[in-house]
Image 1 (spheres, rainbow, N blue to C red):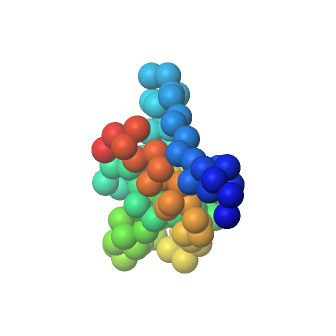
Image 2: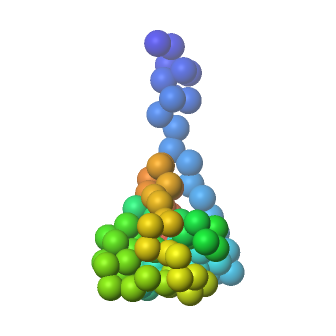
Image 3: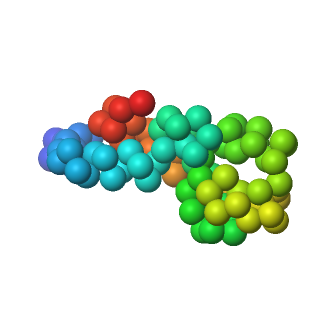
Length: 98
């Protein structure tokens, strides 16, 4: 591999966010149950929204039948993890804080 190709393949990008952007990203990826940055984010089918960590939502659904966001009563089996979204959140985790 040429040195230029190697450098491009191993390039590290730095993302700078304003305080307002950090606040927005943090709110978007905040678990509705534990209030921390989501781990393995889950989407509710009823409100089509990110709602929380996989573990938190599994625990929530064990004791509640309604969605933690929109309160839909058909929630218990209508949520799913988004493949690859956990890795995206991990990239922002240090920037947006815990």
